[in-house]
Length: 243
Image 1 (tube, rainbow, N blue to C red):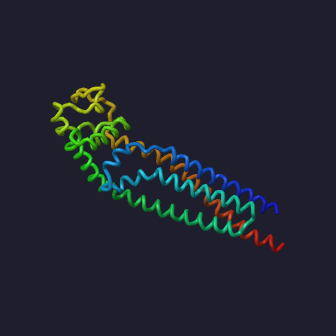
Image 2: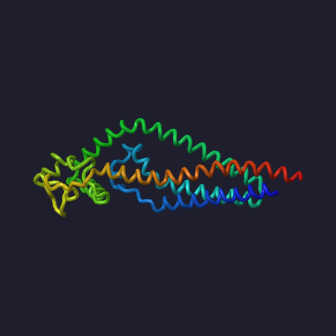
Image 3: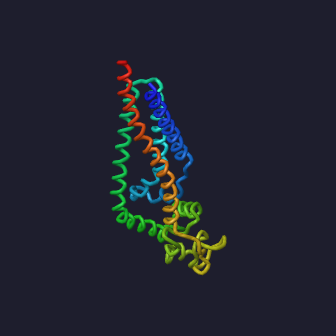
């Protein structure tokens, strides 16, 4: 009976961690602001593989909600000594675990073709700066919002504006977002710390990935432990019923 009580406590503990971990992931998803949304809106469907990274916020919300529910289910099953709830908990956790493994494999496979997609992304973004920036209001507004939001200049760097229609219309000047002061400028007055928006966007995503990856890894460990304990409890309940 002491061992059984210990298992119940461990089950409750692990699922409490899963529950609060799910709440934490849910909170990250709700609070997370994916920078550069205007840029990704512009890039659109042609870069769907790239913009999939932006879905990270919504994945946090969905996965966090599911984990919170499962944590509650596991705790309730252990407290009530309900075999059906424990089995349901185990099956759902196992399915989620397998989906995570499959997703990790898919992500690794995707990374091998990312360089092929980047060439098309870069070409479209630079083309829009060369041909449409300063000419089409909506595109200009999206780029301005992105450069202001990320404190960046151009897609790769300020040279994306070289020879552009914007420069032709503005006497060879660069946009104010690229300059040291709050005014249009020529190349000698380009701010030294102004990186391209792609660099800033990648950096922002990388920071978010580390945060979410750390939370996800911790939850994964507790998921495995909870599955093992739930099965031990499942069979232990039968043993106690015969005592």
